[in-house]
Image (cartoon, rainbow, N blue to C red; front, side):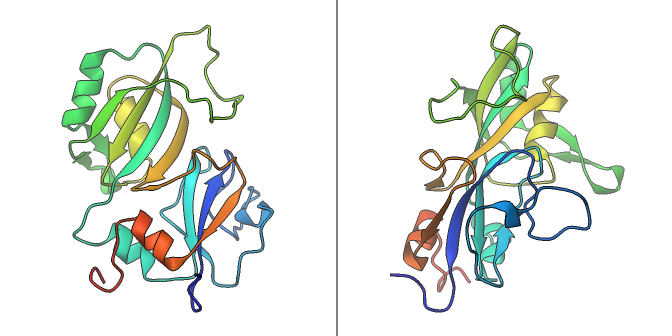
Length: 204
């Protein structure tokens, strides 16, 4: 059953699209998605233009605080393709926390996280920006409980591997593994909050 007051969506954001409906810049916008979003819809937890995958949208202004600004940590999993080989010792550094650039020129030490080698999944559509299969590269899966600006890219940069493809696969139990790029799935309020492991009454 849909919430009579608010609506909740999962979008598989394509590559080369910003997580906005309006922009002063000449960029691909969410308005190009073939879906009629209601007035007041906004993105929760943006993906940068070069990243793709799970983007949450809603008319419910509570969600940002409930998901990203609460004491309760929520897991976000990304699939990453990097240039060159990725030795295990580099994964171990990422697991334990690495220094990345932060606001004002300071260095931020990332929280410990889960990261492991991965295979390119069958559900992932080809991308021209990937490293060619015959050139040295690696795939990894990384799960974080924080989301600084371009954090995943900076973490792999810190150990010497440039990220070529970055896909947010899931936030908690909501994922895009069965949702093609550019497609939208609308969820009921109960499905949305249950998938994110949030109780909007208790966690508010």
